[in-house]
Amino acid sequence: MEVTRRQALTAVAGAAVGAAGAVGAVRLVEHLDESTPLPFYGSPVSAVRPDRSPPSARAASVVWGGTGEERRVALTFDDGPHPKWTPRVLAALEAEGVPATFFCLGRNVRDHGALHHDSVGHHELANHTFDHPDLGRHDWAGCRDQITRTSRIMEQTYGATPTLFRPPYGHVGGAAVLAAAELGLTTVLWSAQAREDLVAAHPDGIVDDIASQVRPGSIVLAHDTGGDDRLVTIDRLRAVIARLREEGYAFVTVSALLAGSSATATAASHA
Image (cartoon, rainbow, N blue to C red; front, side):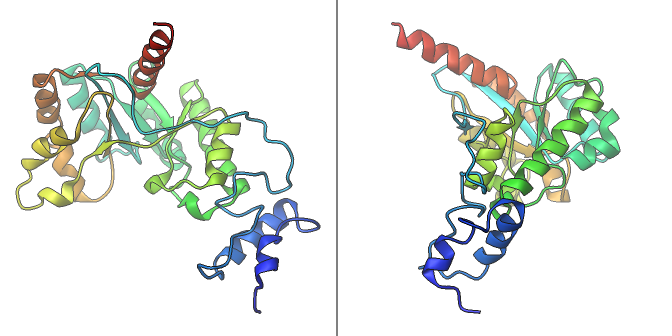
């Protein structure tokens, strides 16, 4: 069936609203060419509720790092917890006395949540969706479900609800931004990362590569499960920490990094 420009613009408006309309809009997106606007309501890129009701949040927060010139950095690890690597990461962090932020998958918290029981109150545990879908292709209801299910199982497992959210692949459309904001979560991306593919021929180069990216306020992306190439970083995590310390950096959780940035901005505004 040929989709006209007008049909695309009004796909979920009028009678086609609510959950059924939203699903239809997502399917419709798959068939639109580059010159056809996406549906006003219900598509993954729409930051408006599919039924056009008022959002329950007044604003959204998406961050890539902290502000200011203080040499602080936040190490983050995605996709765990998992018995293969998470204990190795935790052991390295403990040996160096460094806190970190772990963006956890709900399914892994369900299956391996005990790995982080001793992390509560020291490390930060955050939301990375339930099973790692590409939220750039999910509507508001799908995004909300992924985030809600994960926060719920994390609260049940650790006794606290996460306040930070990271979308898989760094893909974030309007629907994901809105869903996270309505659930009280700050969306966190990153400003530096472990680029194991660039040092495949000389793995020790990961230390120099990460250090070259870090600036005051950096949020560093790494992983505590996945393909074996990621072990390049895990095996050299203590060396990465040592290098950054040599360069004058202190290590904090993402929330502490952002809180410090807010304090700095407030102080500056009253100067």
